[in-house]
Image (cartoon, rainbow, N blue to C red; front, side, top):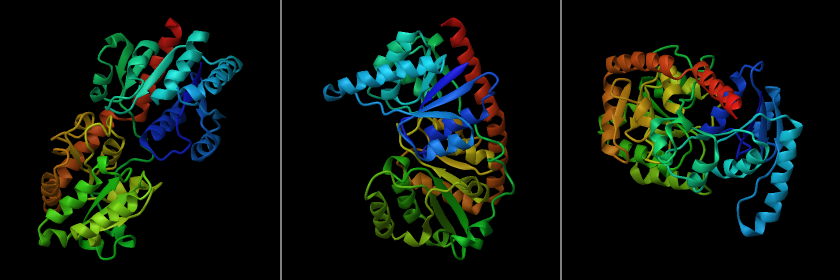
Length: 371
């Protein structure tokens, strides 16, 4: 069967694009042939080229009166695209794109799958609830967005990690961080990976560092892997570092293709996101698969992967609890080892990419049969 995947972004920096790529990369091409709709050429198209996956550039405008003629032309062109490429199913993970594509799908009697990746409500949720054939939630925490949708039209399918990328090698080696952090050899190094913005808990980490006793601060460092999402965001974060007096404890290394190596060598990974910022997030289970304990917040989705058995759970926007958890792991290598072992087993049993691909492929085939 031929499946048309749609991406709202042309880059591959965020979890949604990475999850889509993982699925596409590991699909059995004898069962599913992916074709990808992109807003234009960019990082994502370059990766798809290396995977020998066909992609097409179409910009889908918003549903506003000045855009209507352009939107109708795009929908007409997408109908022709689907006919030409014998598309059997349409998959999208952005609400605006999915809504537009339902007009294409219904005209051609093609089933649709909306992949809901965050727990916060989106503009087109109510319309999608009526128009799409099936909704895939990446966690139970996403389900309340679509409370009116009958159970047979919804599935909870966890994302998966690639075991060739995410695997454990040791129990955390601060030596790895020497090239980024002078003198870190004897420090506990915590890693944050994600967009550098307030709702991801970045400011909570800085506030937590400021709350640590001086004796603990002397042995703790935090490495931030990621980019700011808004203009001026980086300067705001750096200024907050200075205001908190913790700038000497923080290192910003930008977006890293080798982020799994950071996970493998970290004392722990920090995931202090706020409610609504995640559906679950890839970072927790990827870090666990690499052998890193995770300190995560008790929010929808995240609390399904980070539990008291597999990591340390803290309340959102609570820097004191975050500081206490960091101090606990910094001072207790045996606890870190225990959590690491449990986290690895949890990730290996629950979040493999093979399991994800099998469930998604089964759903695609079922929808094709019943359409």
